[in-house]
Length: 194
Image (cartoon, rainbow, N blue to C red; front, side):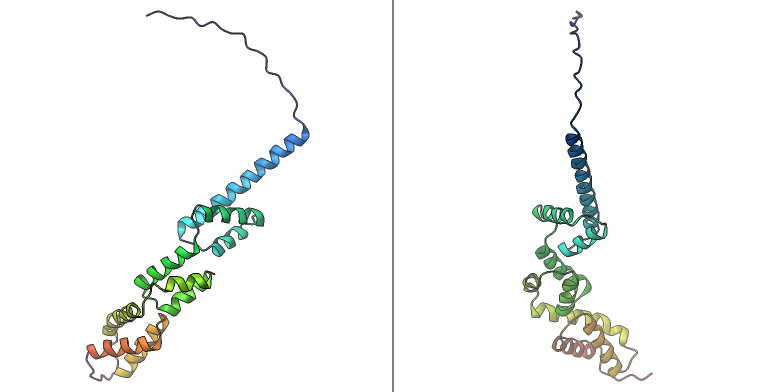
């Protein structure tokens, strides 16, 4: 193998120029703005990794961290533009998950979305996926599941407690009445005294 020698070029001395004070101040303010923007992004991403949030909820978190209103608005707009905050899809997710998992009815779902400050038009649109039949079926399911726990009680008390349970879940009275009657009739209509 042959060794090739490279010719060393003489280094030119670096020319050091003094920056204008305005340039130094502009660079420092740009760096500070970038740090604040990074902080807003870190806070918002940390909050969004825990759970889905509405624009209002995330705004409250950023404001609580004492970020400038302009930075907060810029971060919210950035997150909305990339699809990380979308109140319409959040409303649909709340309806789907809370109805299926927790068994919440229409009025409880509305209350949850209002608490999260989702736009009323988006609330109505997301509730369109919840039919009256599916709400009745879910209420019956919950009532049948809960009824065995009330077997030791007399009929009136069992009916009252099961009705209250479904009311807390947010079901309308007509649905509750049908579900309670069906669940308690299926378990036997014998009156039990304590």
